[in-house]
Structure formats: C-alpha cells, structure tokens
Amino acid sequence: MSNALLLLGCPESPVQTAIALYLANKLKRDSIDVTVAGTRSAIALLKVSDPEGNYVSETVDLDSCIENLAEKKLDFDLCFVFVYNDAGISYLFTLSSMSDAKLFAIVFGSDADAFASMIDFECEKIVYKTGHNPVPLKRRIDQVMVWDA
Amino acid sequence: MGCIEQMKYEVILKNTSFKECREYVKKNFKEFYQVKPGYRMFDVYLIGVPPVLIGVDGDDVVFPYTKPCYGTFLLRIRGEAEIESLRKG
Image (cartoon, rainbow over all chains, first blue to last red; front, side):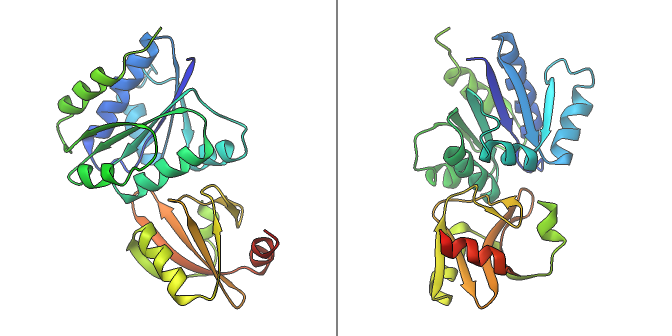
C-alpha cells in the first residue's frame, strides 16, 4: 500500500478534523502518502491545525477529487470516507462505485448506528456514536488499522 | 459542483434522502433512467446511493444533487442535451 485518500464530509462535528489528523499521522508513519479531499471549510480546518504540513501533505477540492476518480485519472490503495450525515453516505456509495481502493467508512455522530446500517456493501466500518469526543473512534481505528506490512 | 448552482433550477425536495428521491421520481415521472453514481450531467459528476434515478419531464431533467453540509436535494433543470444523452444510454 502506498497511498490513501481521506474524504472529509461536513466539518460540523469537531471529531472529524481530530480523527483526520490522527489517521494522517498513523498512515504517514507507515510510509503511506495521504491526500485529503474536502470542502473549503473542512480543508481550512486541517490547514490551520497543521500549518507546516506535518501530517497532511496534499489536499484537494472535493469536486475535483470526484471528477478525477470518475474519469479514472486518479485512484488510491486505501480510502477513508467520513460519514456524519446523509451526504456522507452518498459520498461513500459513490466512492465504492468509482474506486478500486480498500474502503473504510468512518461513521460518527448521533445517527452513526442508523447510517452504518445503510452500508450494505463490503467495506470496513469504523462506527462510534460520538460528535465531540474523538477518543472512542480513535480506539476503533487502532483496532482496525493493522497492516500486513 | 458550482455550475449547477449558477443554473436556473427548481428545488422539488430538500433535506431529503436518496430513497425519497428515487421514490418521488418513480412515482411522478413516466420516463426515468437509472444511472450509476459518478454519472456526468451538466459537466458535474452525480453523487449518490445507487440506483440513482433521473426523471425526464418535457425538456427538464429531475435528479438528486448532494451538498456535503446541506444534504440531498431533488432538482429540476432544463436539459435537452442531457435528456438526449440519457435516451441514447
């Protein structure tokens, strides 16, 4: 595995930015290049928190990312989709349809269980009903992200 | 996907789900087409939960449109060229 995409959703929940930076650091330590796609606000939150790019080296506009994936100009080995609302589910299914990456659904927020139950295709689900405290989700990630390498 | 927002559109459903969009299109339009997420229309790539249904009503297309922070909308936009592409398959 050499590269990964973190596809962020609406940054309404503070958990998203914290987990994105945590994941980016974890992947970087495993020598996996990380690209983060998201809305302007979601990317701005990351860049303000990581001004020197210690965790995230590359960011891309969400629409450009979808366009490049759809046109097969781009793909990744791993893809983590952040699901906090119905739109997140839509992006997850879209990624599943477009990409050959190993897919991870990071599902959080008050409706996490309901959204997780909508995922009826093969992917790794990392689910915790939290909107403010990232620690339980971090623990789930640590359990799931054990590479063969 | 800014280009759709700059077009003349009618919002049929807002704060809706893909299931509701699908059911609305099936119920209200005789002509509709099933496409995969990532289908290109109006120079954008549709986001969605498959099957994504696009309705045709006269010269208008009716389709789901998702914004990350605002959820899913069912929109109606005039799109003769898009209808032609849908009919050609």
